[in-house]
Amino acid sequence: MKKIMITGASGLLGQALVRTFGGKYEVIATAKSELPDALVNKVEFHQLDISDATRCKDLIQELDPDVIINAAAYTNVDGCEDQREVCWRANVKGVENLAVAARKNMALLVQLSTDYIFDGEDGPYGEDDTPNPLGYYGKAKLASENAVRVVGIPYAIIRTNVIFGTGIDVKNNFFLWLYNSLKAGQNIRVVTDQYNNPVAADDLALGIRQLVDESKYGVFHLGGKEYLNRYEFAVQLAEVFGFSTELIAPIETGELQQKAPRPMKGGLKIDKAAKTFGYAPRPLESVFNSLKNRLK
Image 1 (tube, rainbow, N blue to C red):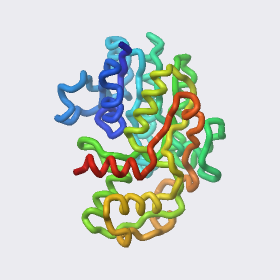
Image 2 (image 1 turned 90 degrees about the vertical axis):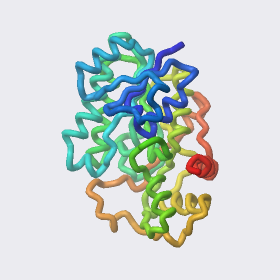
Image 3 (image 1 turned 30 degrees about the vertical axis):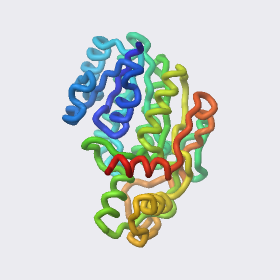
Image 4 (image 1 turned 60 degrees about the horizontal axis):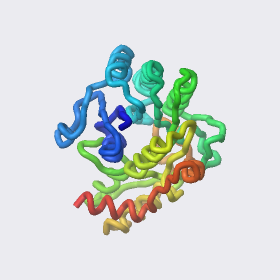
């Protein structure tokens, strides 16, 4: 049985990866902080801050994993503009540490990246399109891709966008913000000019498992099935959950005065992953209905 090490296991995607790989693989979860109580005793856990090079080297040498999936990252896009050292340490230096440590036993490193490496002028993007990040977060994630490439290990770079869903004590994501706000009857503003193909954490985790099952390498885009703007996503969510769509006001990005620039027409083409290992994310309506049942 292959041994899979998952970093950032306490987060939304990390939890989905632990669930998805469990049973079929020997799963080892790591995270900077402790796992939520509900996950303790369900999986082997080791505390790991990937920015600590010595700890990365020692733990990976001790555990000897076949595959390392790096779901640890600093993803606050505006925060990355203000806290560039924090962003670089987590998103680039940490990846370098994992890659160098993985070289000892030539473990496959699966690195999560983002559509923010593109400028959003002409999305959705394919794997061979030229990166041109607008903000520091995108620049750091592009640097992390390059850090993986130069070490000389087997790797898979998974670019994704707008990961959403629910988990145990996970930080807010676009879906949870919409759900909690609309459930409370709050009026919200959602942009109409940012386009992506949001992906459920469970679908993304399954796609990563399919890649590992098939032992595929290289760069793959794993996004959602539908390409739409944030406002359309919010309206569809409201309709499935029975919330009032009148609570959702359409606005443009400029009105938010966000610190970091956003790629307006982002998103990712998923044809290569579909053809290579059968990646097939669910339609949004199906995902929303599944989350509705889970949140009950």
